[in-house]
Image 1 (cartoon, one colour):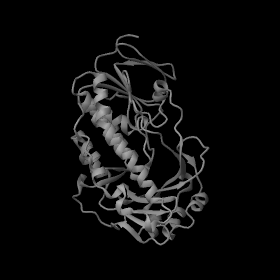
Image 2: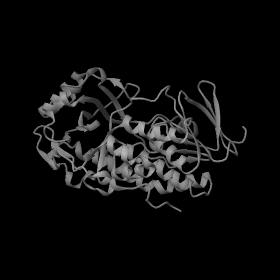
Image 3: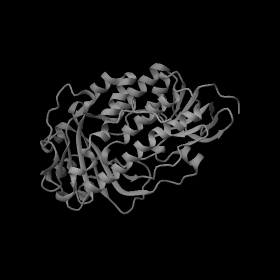
Image 4: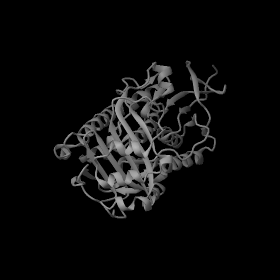
Length: 393
């Protein structure tokens, strides 16, 4: 292996974690290449939540005005009874003050945030993102990391950052982990034009219906013209592969057949050609995120259940904190150690809170679910700012 260029960093995965890390590191003066296995980057995913702290951190990278324009504020979320639609916690929000900025969480289509990050990375370096690059093997040496890709291409860098998701190739190569275990939950997702959804969304802009073993979450994105819909139901098994298994309206309705008519009405308007389902997978937080010159971030290091909507936020946080840790100039391996020590408590708190939130909002009796004590009612967990949080020594 030849000596890698000093300060050169390879990132595997061009998702939110990888692109945020790339942008933050480029702004700190590092040389970065992002390797993405997909042949093209485009319209992938659906609605996500950007926490107030993550929003402020993205604004510090120069994305503030564009992010505000592309997202909708979330001043309140209504938690309602699955059968009656009665309010259990929160508020039925209809109109958010126009000047909320990043004092509130924001809802955005994942593809829109991804596009903002990708454009900002390419503005720094037009060749920073390499597509069609599926990692097949890696080898660490005293001066860097050598990578080999499925198409036969190769590359070297001083260090490698794995942002390649819950089924991380890098994690398997370096740590030998098996596939993550099924979490006992199956999710359905679709996007519905507001004109189609209008008869069923009068209660508010962001509503979560909670019931025995199930939740149904819907909120507005893209200027209020699209309704993001996700239903999550407990299940005993999941056999399919991938994140985008086609689903039918009939099976979605069957999972939520005893929910309020507004829920069933929304499901009936789902565009069946784009209705998908997938199993939720989770694993305990890795004890070690780094091995020599290789570091795991995002879902590769700490996959989250979605019940608090902080999966995207923690990925964004990782990228910001990593750049700050490496910018201290103490060397790559020391920087990786500072990063993990700085993130461990925060990540574990979010992971545990997400599990607790799921247990509360999928309780057998929604009227006695204890929502007043749910993690979602604690603003501090959403207000963590990765740009100003103290770094560990």
